[in-house]
Amino acid sequence: MSKEKTITLDFSTSTLNSWWNRQSLRLRFAVSFSLVTTLILLTLLPFVYSLIRRQMTSDIDGQLRIDWALIEAHLESDGNGGIQWRKSSPATPQSPGYANSWFDVWDRERSLLKHWPEHAAGALLPPPPIADQGHFVSVSLSDGRPARTYQMHAVIDAQPTLLRVFRDESAHRATLRRIVLGLSMGMPIAVLLAA
Image 1 (cartoon, one colour):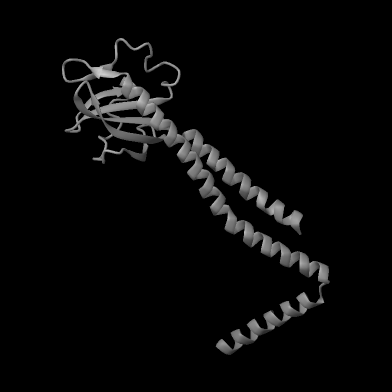
Image 2: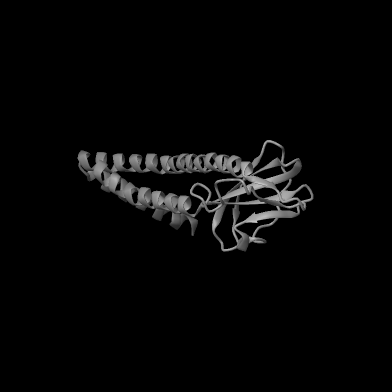
């Protein structure tokens, strides 16, 4: 049985080699060049995807740091152990620059003190313990949307807290999917043009 398989395989290989050798030099060069180009593009595709994803995540993280600093500056104690938006602040959580982000504030015992928007309270679990320098993590919101979060310890009116801010990642992930789709569709065209 194995002898028959070996003979069949040898026959197929020799037939393929014979066919290949009968082709013109131009065709063999075009096919070889196309295969090499395909291998190069397949190797580059994950690298390009990773590079774009890292840059987009870095952009979100930079915006979250700004969100955190802006929101932290507008919070104050409500006098009853809770946290509220500073009454003397000219901005509100609905103001431009704040409307695209959410935040929550927790005490050191991981009890919720404040959540914005109010209707989303309880949609997220308490933040995990973190180091003092802050921490980024991706989470899923209660409605299934992906979000990126930044959390760091804050002292609000002498009250030690943990402030966490969120940004919706849906648009960024949709952009990544479109990029992958475009690269996947463009690769065969690039190979054909190269050939």
